[in-house]
Length: 107
Image (cartoon, rainbow, N blue to C red; front, side, top):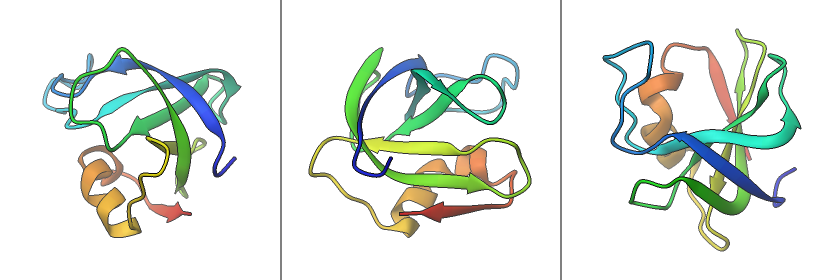
């Protein structure tokens, strides 16, 4: 799936808060990829990096996978074509949520 072009429907836009955990602020766009099922039985979740404005939908390239060792699902990292980030740069952008899990970034 690395390098695959996907469309992410954003259900938590940059600058919003989690609907249930009201103290969790989303500094990046976050959503799901319709039609691809994840380990939790829901559609695959994805972070969108490299876009600095709230979105409703985004088409980009899968550049990394955040493998949650202590959870049933992984998160995909999607960015505009030609945009890359290091593991450290990805972690800095997603740690607001991923800090609560034992995870590794696969590229």
